[in-house]
Structures are given as C-alpha cells and as structure tokens.
Length: 368
Image (cartoon, rainbow, N blue to C red):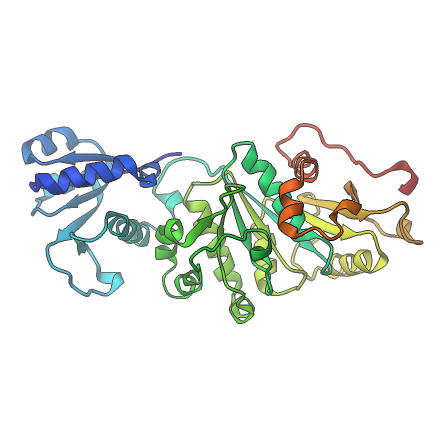
C-alpha cells in the first residue's frame, strides 16, 4: 500500500515525542509515512526539493518551507469552531487519532479521492451478492466467501446494504453503532473516508471488518445511487482491503443498481425452484437492475440443490458455474454456527473469481 507522506514541524519536543510514539504504536502508520522535526534548519535541509503530501506545524512557515507540500495544516493552540470548508487549522491538543482523522478529511476535501493523492493502481475487488428473490441463502454464502478470504490472509470488508439486514446473526459481539455512516454520506463524503477506521468494527472470530449498523430501513430506502457509489469508493480509497463483499437484497432499488454497477464481479444466487429462476429471468430480461446485456462479470450460483430440479429447468438460459448442495446438518443450526463450521462453500466460491486460472462449470450432466 502506498502511504501519504506526513511531516510534523514543531519546537515542542514533548509533543513531538508523544506524536512519534503514537505513530509507531497505532494502526494509523499503515496510512502515513511520517517524519518529525523540532529544528527548522534540519527541516529545511531534509525536505527541500522533495515532494511531500502534508506539513503539520504549530510554527509560522514561509513559502520556502511550504512549497514542497501539497497541503499545510496549522496546529492551533486554541479550539476554534470553523466551518469544515474553510478549515486550514486544527486543534493541537486533542487525541491523536481524532487529530489525524481531521488531517485526512482536510486533505481529501482539497484533493478529492485518495486515488488522486497516491500513485498506484487500485487493487481492491468489489464483489456483490444478489438474487432475484429473498430466502435463497445469499447472506450466508457471501460471508462464507468473506471468511475464506480472511482466513487466507486477505483483508476483507463486508458491506451489507439490505433494507432489513441480519448481520447481527453472524457477528454477535456487541459493537458501537456505525450509524454515523449515513450522516457522512449526506453531509460530508470526504470526512467519511477519514472516519471509516473509527466507524468500522472487526469480528474477532473471522477478522472481517464491517459496519455495525442498526436495522434502519428508512435510511436504506432514501439512499441514492450517488450515496452508494460514494460509500463503496470511500472503502476502496482507504486502500486497507483486498476484497469488499457487498450483500444486497432482491429489490430493484437504486442503491442495488449502483452497487452492481460498481462491482468487479457479481455472484447471482439462484435457489433450486421455479420461482427463483423466473424472478431472476425477468430482472435480467427487462434490465431492471441496470446490467444491460453484458453478463461477463456475473457468476450464477445454484444454492441448496437437492436430488432433482423442477420441471422446466431446461427452459431457462442461465450459465450456472457451480451448485451448492443442500446440507441437512444446517437444520436447526444458528447462522453464526453455519458460517463458522463452513470449510467447503467459501472455497467453492473462491475458485470462481476471475483472478483464479481455472474456471469450470460444475453443473451435473443430468441437469444440462
């Protein structure tokens, strides 16, 4: 991951020492490469003609000192209420994690997306799970893939955008609410990027990051296409993740269309009954989810397969890549238990990702 270069210039040696210790011990070091100076001459000598991103200082600096920096942010001795769009200084004596979140917010606001700040190609993969109707086991499948990736040392963010989500059934530890996400989406998208670190939670059993959102159907109902695009991009822009797994409900709401449009790959889950096939066929035939005629990034998955499929199965035109057998052991098990016990489904779905060399249709010959 490419880092943002941050230089602190201060004659306050105690402050410099505390700042240095925080940068060493905190996860924030994954975002910044930092240098600290308490001597102005040394600062000038070591930063002259070297392009840097941010200068953070409590001193008055001239043009010679600031010319090498994209942004100069002053550390104020007093706490002054200033509108965000005018802010060029921040309060010096606040917790460092809050101070650095504000630094990021100011910088992103000036420069736009992080991709315009840091050179380097985005490598995050956005994978959405969708279905034509509810009750097909989509959330469990999406989390089985997320867990498999996480257990194989991939950094994973799980984003549930269902109107009535059930994330709490899988991640049962008490976590602070992430409801502020909706505020930042509407009021200050650039601050959302800077605050994702403090808003997210991490499941201790799977190491999957996620937003611990309350069930707020009204917020999902009013979420716009732009809101969802901004949210996904903000998670991308942290450059903390290899995969972003997006769990969608079966509605044709614009938030789902936006998520699908911004996905690298889509896992479309079908259940082994006529209703599921018919609903999905109608959505695609009438382009109700905005995918057009291009199905190249869609993986059709047949879930909960029994001994045989329904009459008329052959009349539908789905290129099913894999089928997942009905597991009788799941009857009576909690969703959390199903997720933690899975050693098959996650790997099965992982093999379908485009970066994997082998792609094969696993539809049984008797169903072709």
